Figure 1 (tube, rainbow, N blue to C red):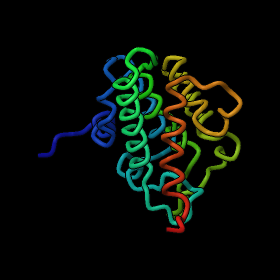
Figure 2: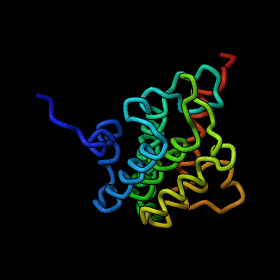
Figure 3: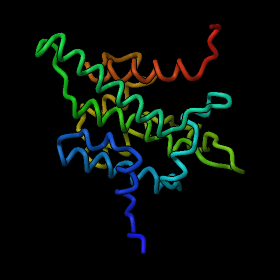
Figure 4: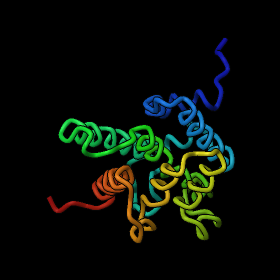
Length: 187
């Protein structure tokens, strides 16, 4: 008989980078936000492993979870390079960076919906983009303000703000991934 798997266990299996968050409380709160988003959005972990990371990319071949995990790993690699190169001259909180990277797009699970087998922006997604929803859901779970800042400023909404070091790293890693997979290259 197969053991019953909890939603939390499914999420951690799908996104093992959650285990990179050393602060147990922050890790559990980050997982709780994912649980909330999946439940409120009407998704399953199986389904979010299949949906495209963006409804704005025609025939998107990269999944939502692939994007989230890839950008998180890019952030960790960038932080490691900066730490090796500059030591303590650049202040970074790696737990905040990882949590922010893993939560920045969680609001898409509310922004998007599935209609007739197609993933589209939900009615609520036409009123609030995923950074706003992600901040609201994370705030409800007492995620630290420094992580909320990363979520809030990661996309174009953050262009009018001064980003924290962690937000700068995530913002650029996110757009590297988005630009590489969303546009046709001439060569």
